[in-house]
Length: 110
Image (cartoon, rainbow, N blue to C red):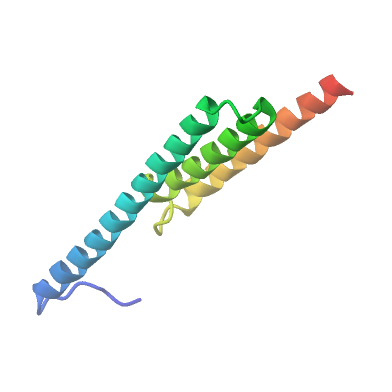
């Protein structure tokens, strides 16, 4: 495994980190802008009288899921290396919650 620190030229590390930080900030600004846009769409879907509740509720839930994904991957840094175990626990919890809700809905509705 190669060591990425440059003892001979420390400016190389600084330049690399600046480039990576600028790229990370760009991704965060883009995802923040998209989340604000999705929030405005959700407000529009609720306020617009032409949409029925049968359309608005699933649509808003879909927008909420998209925003959760943006939150996890860009603001909670789940896309970075070293976050595999927390991601595994998070996704495992989502699967258990989904199966539990699905089981209770099946039991109640049958």
